[in-house]
Image (cartoon, rainbow, N blue to C red; front, top):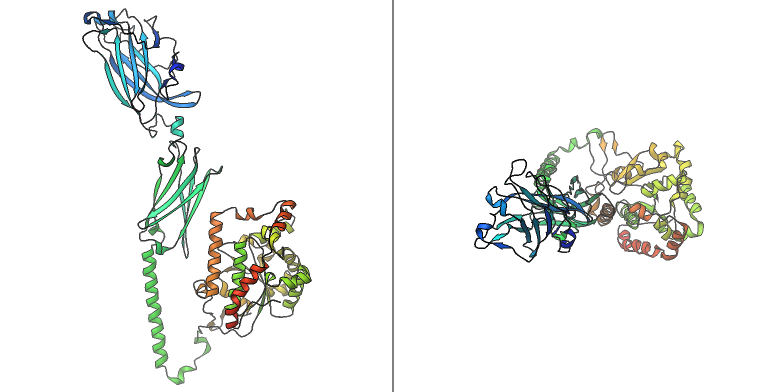
Length: 590
């Protein structure tokens, strides 16, 4: 051989394979090479041949060792190839072979191989030193091995043995990254972490990353000084995973956060490599900057109000009757009480809670008479859904009452079902005492709506935190769609048949804006309901599909197992009854 490590197979590899992971894959029948015949390879013998020093050969020389990956019946494994040379001196004539052993210092297990040969010349046919190699020794990443080598026969009074300690690199080394045990430790895993940010009342971070082949579970965490939050996520046959974190600015004392993903690979388990990423929230909106802006804004408002008060206190009584165009009233006086019929879809128990909280808010804060199927189940049961809806539709046609349609995923799906798509039955519809009220409502109201004279009777809205504009059925796209609670004040003026902006004045109702509505008890309950459903959607992206009942048997089982929730709805109304009576407003049943 010419110094290059050859790839062969050794016949006794099967004998040492049982020695833990330390074994030999090379199964060469012999070590014959050009210029050398009758070179055999065997396991070491306990018998030692010792000659007097002058009749014994000199010691060998170490050459290079190479680390790589070979393939066995279990997959790719890390191996080391060890090479040595024979000194070109007179001792070649006495040389009868070489013996090499490999000791695993972690387990104290070893393998030993004996090369038997005779050399006639000091150099090989290419005029280089004779070279031998032990190839395909299976090793483990990160472990240390002791190599021992000597020529045969051994001298009686002097030791020519060579010893060398080698440490196999870890799985981060490119030469063995593709070994099976390294793959099971995540050596080739690139999570390709992505982050998405959204700022509102609370800050939202969505972390996306690529799942690994040999890890089913992950722990994703974000931490800063004094703040730590972590969530567990399972792969479940997905290749891309998303984890959402939502928190308030007040929880953070620093802008920079550390994002860490802890995989649990089959070998390293809790000690696996953890990819990290630094997130600088100051690039999006700094808490201190927001606080500074809020402080400056409050100071500016205070100065402005002080100026207005000063001018009012120093104004001449003769000048108080200024023109209407110069007046900007800061409030809107509600004069006529209006009735609103609410049409919606029972998408989820949390969404039903949002609808009920909206009814409470409209009754207690807006002084609106709310008509809801859940609050009139007795009369609805007597009349039936079609007659009940038709009765209320006729009442709105002969009065200034309105019909508010709350669009959601269920509204979109049921409209498509009416247009020929597959039928839709939701879990809450099956459990509800009143059943699906949306589909008959759309059947009655869409023909009525398309007549231009009826536009003013219908109001379209959706909660943009938990729904989207795509949930609005196409026939209603020709009218205004209100985002709740961002545009609730505009929706209220629509109910009252009043324009927010009139010549010379801008109407405003205190406590109706997106930043104010939750300051009253009913508004706070509505915001809590919205945030609860929003958080549930983030944790369960397939929530709507989970609510669908696909088979008639399943629907029948749901109707049998469910307990009608009229008691729950009634208790919800009763808890509000005391406050509503005190405010002389309330939820009215038709």
